[in-house]
Image: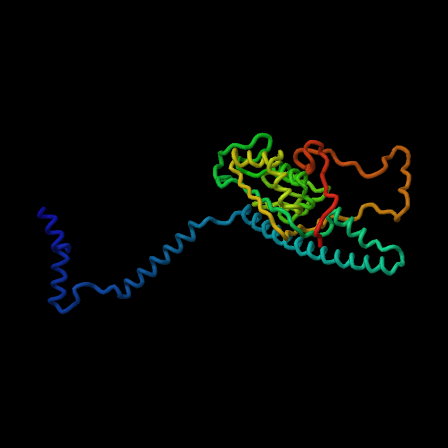
Length: 317
């Protein structure tokens, strides 16, 4: 206790106190000033040593890191270029349609403008606007956090992740509920659209999608919700939420927009009113047959494997 009391009352060592008293008796300050040249030089030298040590411990960029950075830069530049080209194609397409309409009016023949617009709507070549529903799917809140998490059966995706098969089932359910036009994250789905996967990524017509997955479907909102919820797709979506905690929300809207399919182009044409040319022996006639459906690419009815397309569309622009 005596030692503790002494340390509390006189924390300065007796030798240091005696030296301070001698300096005070000689007319000098009790302690050496910290602003001397030596202290400043030592501080600068210490800071320099810390900077050199931090620079030495910093990981040096490897050749693989440099290549990765270059690839990321090129991918971002190409994506930006692709977006600009798509906007340019859309603008040129509008100009072409205007010129076609003008040429039809000046030809003196029957006015086919309304018929062309109707066919463009059916082919998903033009954007549409009208009432509908927005269905948003997103991974579970804990998806991707556990590297040891198991994968979903026959999908290859981790538990809690939305798969391409999930989007196929939901899209087919919306078609069956009366949807007249559908897009996913701004990508229009036509009769030839394909929802696939590459590793853990989901792609639509070779365009990658980023979560959350926003599905916009035009049609009667109330009728679609009433038909979708008790259907196979609605029950399937409820099971995804209960079993894998996948999040989904559906909301109705009065003025939703789906873009046109930029990849839609004219493949076959014939004069109006003429019969199709006869095919040579051994070749098929009529419309091209649908490719065989598969679990990774079909966007049609899962029971038949044929894509479902709307026959009429309302409130389109």
